[in-house]
Length: 138
Ligand code: 5GP
Ligand code: ZN
Image (cartoon, rainbow, N blue to C red; front, side, top):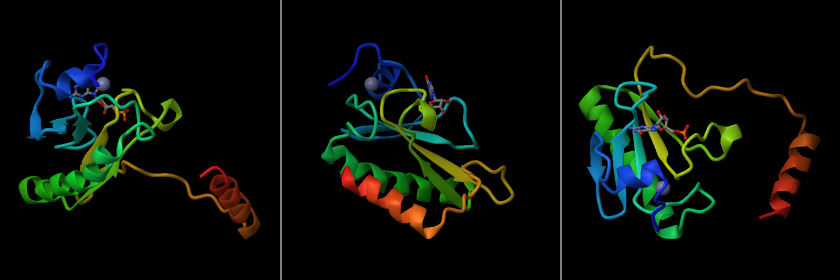
């Protein structure tokens, strides 16, 4: 299904032009217009899924492998030495476009920090209790 009001549906299906890195029957991968680093790519399904919780199994089973393939091609073509696969779900997580997408972000030696956090220091009781709460909803 496509969503007529969704810009990523239009880009993924070629209705709006984009710098396309890769295309097959399920996905289009395009350069991000506000890149975190040179070559920052977004993998867009051609069908509309709001986020990873909606993504169907067929797409889910392919997207990670495609991210790895594009990352490997970036290392050969752009000279990056690593890459991050980043996928945001929900406003609090930084999602701004509500059509599932996976970021493939090339990382260069001595490049700016991109995906970072301050590690917390929970004790083992808190880790156990948190794990149990999540597990109970699976
Ligand atoms: P999010 O924050 O939702 O995970 O990522 C959305 C990304 O899409 C951002 O990095 C933003 O720069 C990119 N973006 C938003 N609109 C467009 C667009 O129309 N074209 C392209 N190429 N990138 C877009
Ligand atoms: Zn869409």
